[in-house]
Image (tube, rainbow, N blue to C red; front, top):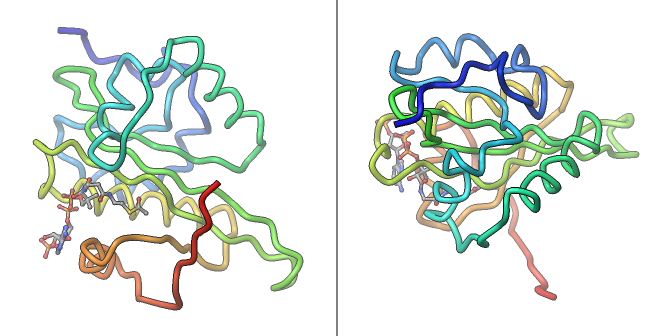
Length: 174
Ligand code: ACO
């Protein structure tokens, strides 16, 4: 089994200090929350996401290219993961990305996307911690609000995370 890789040995998407310590301190001692790393394909990033939707079979090179695309959009994409220290594998993920507006005095909105917790780890408040960390980051970087879309089934979860239902989602697929 691979041994746990500490943050200082990883190429990370953003500064780990942005993740609120009030949230990380509430994780079990068997778990670690950190920004996404360039080598997280091998730690099961996409397998965890597959509880949410179908995921592609990416090569290491394709994955790392996508990672660099996110990192190249300075101060825009904040994807974080929860890692099991015992297996060095990812058990929870989530992203907040920033939208610069002209309205709201040039305000910024945080959009939460792609929240997923490994089925075997659901019900341990990991989803809640991911959302708390992402909304904490959103607040720290100056967003005036954080929003997300979800299915009816997940509304109670997001309400438990402090969100309220507002407006409607519209979609046009291409
Ligand atoms: N219905 C009602 N309550 C729920 C639900 C639900 N579907 N899911 C969680 N909760 C409650 C829990 O009971 C808990 O309540 P408590 O504080 O009273 O004990 C609270 O919400 C926090 O739950 P967690 O343990 O943090 O939830 P978990 O770690 O299982 O993560 C998640 C929830 C992320 C929805 C997980 O079940 C999952 O990965 N589901 C599949 C993928 C998915 O649907 N992701 C969300 C897509 S929407 C988006 O990405 C913006």
